[in-house]
Every structure is written in C-alpha cells, then in structure tokens.
Length: 260
Image 1 (cartoon, rainbow, N blue to C red):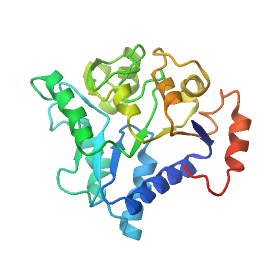
Image 2: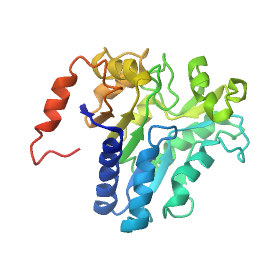
Image 3: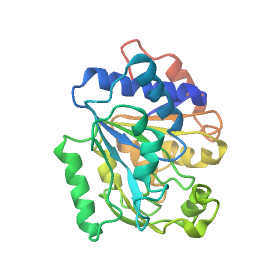
Image 4: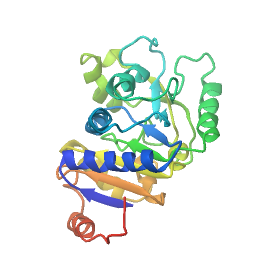
C-alpha cells in the first residue's frame, strides 16, 4: 500500500495521470468508476484532457461500483445517470461501454452474478477508482461485510443514508435502503486500486484503513492485502495517520523507476 499526502488538486492530477497512461498504453483498458464527491476533480481533469489534449476513451470499458435498488431508472440520483452526467457524457466512451449493476432487476441475485461475470469476461478491471465513507465502507460494503464478498444486495447503514441525504435535497427518507454493490472480493480483483479521500471527516476512516488491523468492521482495511493499492489523501484526511511524516518522506524520495 502506498500513501500519498498532497493537496486535493494534486491528488486528482495523479489519478488522471494514471488513467491517461493506461489509456495510451493499453488497447482495451477497463476502468472502475466510483460515484460520490471524491472522484469529481479526477473526472473534471480527464474531461479537460479529452477536450484540450484529445485524450480518447473510445477503446475503453467502464464498470461502476454500485447502484441503488428501487430508484426508477429516470431518477437523477440513479448512479447510472450520475456517472453519465459527471463523466461519461463529457468524453468519448463508445455506446454501452460503461455499465453498472442493475438495481431495477426483478432477480437481484441473478443480476449480481451476471455483473461479476461481465467484469470477468473483459479480463477484469485494470484501474479502479475508489472513495471511502466515514464509517470505512468502500463501494456500499458497510461495516461487517465479508472481506471475500462478491457483487450482491446490501442494506445501507443509517450513517451512509445520512451522508447521502445531501444528494436527495437533505431528506434522508428519500435515500434508498438497499443497493447492489461490488463486493470486497470483487474490488480486490482489480489490478490497481486508487482511493481518494479528502477532508477531516474522513480522517478516522483513513487512519483505520491504512494503520489499523484488517477487519470487516472497517471494510476498507482489505486494501492492505492488495499488491497495488494507492491511497491519496489531503492533509485533513491524513491528520490521524501516525506515520504521516514517513509517508511524505517516502513519496518525496521515490526512485525514478517507481511509478504509481
């Protein structure tokens, strides 16, 4: 696990650099796309590079982390609509190149298995963008989630629904109680995980993820077991890290041959 502590805009640039390198080096790259506030600067930077530098996503595929269950597909907070507005419609992905779990399926168990199969069929995800919740969840894997879990139905924790109420006009009662989410085992199969966290409200979750014991009580700690996980945090989110100075020193003294 590599920890990078830098200002928010620099973190977004680093993730965008990794995505651009993948797009330019691979003929059929597969991206894992997160929703929420954490990756917005990354998507803005990638959209800028597409418009100004002709960075193309035409050969890429994308898979979303999760989707609400019970929202009509036309609802603006349906994650397929959110990711389209925030990113997909701003670049040149091919038709149907980006897909997410089907939260409107009649058989949610079958839809979950089909989603994992679709990821496997394209050879897995090359680079997965992640955020983290204040309770340590990644995707919608709430505390108590199995570290080997696959895409499945989950019940959202009250804290998660409170955190997401801002997207529903502040009304927590409008936030769905269930979702389909990639499992921690599914996420761990991506070849490179890049998690972004900013703000002091994420500090405890970041501390537990990076320096705490691996535990289902803090689901993001599963990233400690991944061979290529990059954690990108600003000073506020890093404020609880006991080894913060060491992480800064390590990043400042990387060898030239070392890359994200």
